[in-house]
Structure formats: structure tokens, C-alpha cells
Image (tube, rainbow, N blue to C red; front, side, top):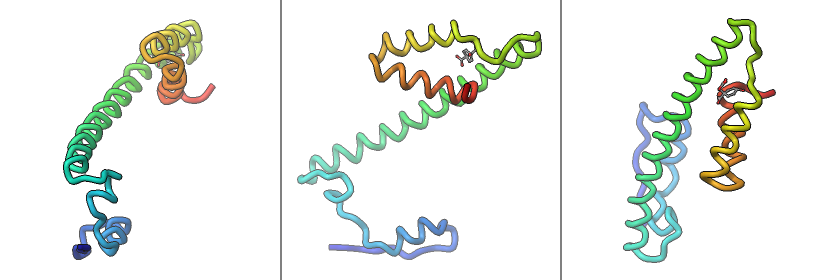
Length: 116
Ligand SMILES: O=C(O)C(=O)C[C@]1(C(=O)O)C=C[C@@H](O)C=C1
């Protein structure tokens, strides 16, 4: 069975487009072939969304702390970056997460100090 719900004035244009689409079944939404698996996946996805929110918040907090360090160094006449410290950060992530950890650390560093 397919259902739709009515667009409202509070919806964004993207939400309005979504409203006009027939609602996807749990199987379509999750890729599962049973209701049990679909329920498990939906619940786990909620936990992932909550974890992602926390990760994003931690990255934003890290960016703010990193900015304090960089501003202090620049105000003292030093450069924005400190490559020896960046090597320590890269090693830390790689030791915890393996090779992809290095790529993640590079992205985190770019978020914190911009591109070099
Ligand atoms: O630890 C520092 O000295 C910082 O400036 C912070 C930080 C980081 O975000 O980890 C940012 C820029 C530097 O190049 C090195 C590290």
C-alpha cells in the first residue's frame, strides 16, 4: 500500500517534493527483506544519526579550540600551522583507526586550519 501526506506551508521546497512522492515502504527505505530486519535497521539508523550529531558537535568544538591555538601563535608572530604537531595528530588517528584514520585526520585538520 502506498500513502502520501499533505504538503504544508511550513515545509521547505525539498520537503514539499518529498511529500508529493508516495511514501517508501520499510523494505525500500532500508533494503531489508523482513519487517524484523527493517525495524532493527531503522532503530540503528536513529542511533547513527544521534552519533553523527555528536561527532559533528565534537568537530565544531575541536575547530574552536584549534582556532584559539592558531590565533595565539599568529598574535605572537608565529605561523598558522605547526607541521610537527600535525604529524602527531595524524599518527594518533592512524594508530587508532588504521590507514583510513590518516585520511580522516587530514580532513579534520583541514576543517580546523583551512587548506595549506
Ligand atoms: O596544535 C596546534 O599547534 C594547532 O595549531 C592545532 C592544529 C590542530 O587542529 O590540531 C591546527 C593547526 C596546526 O598546524 C597543528 C595542529
